[in-house]
Length: 163
Image (cartoon, rainbow, N blue to C red; front, side):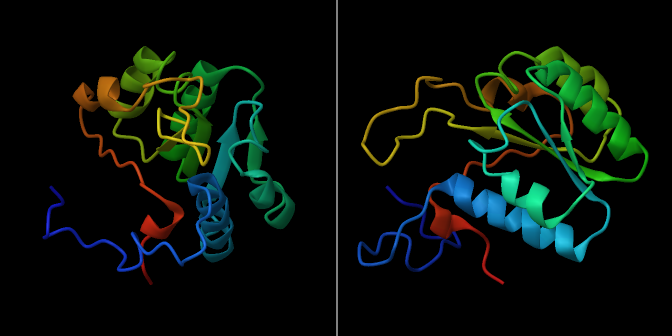
C-alpha cells in the first residue's frame, strides 16, 4: 500500500510521461548543483560514464576526481574534501560503495560527521528490461547503522525533487 502522506511527483505513475534512468537525473542534478555552488565536487571510481557524472566533468572543469577502481580511497578522499569545506558527491555502484568500503565510510565520514554524499547506483532496482542489475540486492541498508547518515533511493527519474 502506498503511503498517502508521501510527497511524490504527481506524474510518477503516469505511463504517458517519458521515463528516464535515475542515473540520468543524477548526472543532470550534479551539473545544476555544480553551477550553483562552487564547493560541489564529484568523485568517481572509474564509472563516470555508467553513473552519468561525465556531464559534470564536461561542464564543470577541475572539480571531478577520478580515483580508479578504489572505492575505499574514494570515500576517504571525499571525507577529507568535506572537512576542508567542499561538498563531495562520491559515485559508484552500490555493490562497491557502500558494499566494499563500509568500514572506511564509518571511520572517515560518519564519525567525523563529514558532509559527503554517497551515490550507490544499481542497487538491485529493476532496469528497463525488467531484470535486476548484476550487482544484485546491495542497498544502503548495511550502512543504515552508521551514525548520522540519511538514506534515500529514488524510484524513477521523476522522483527528483520539484523546484
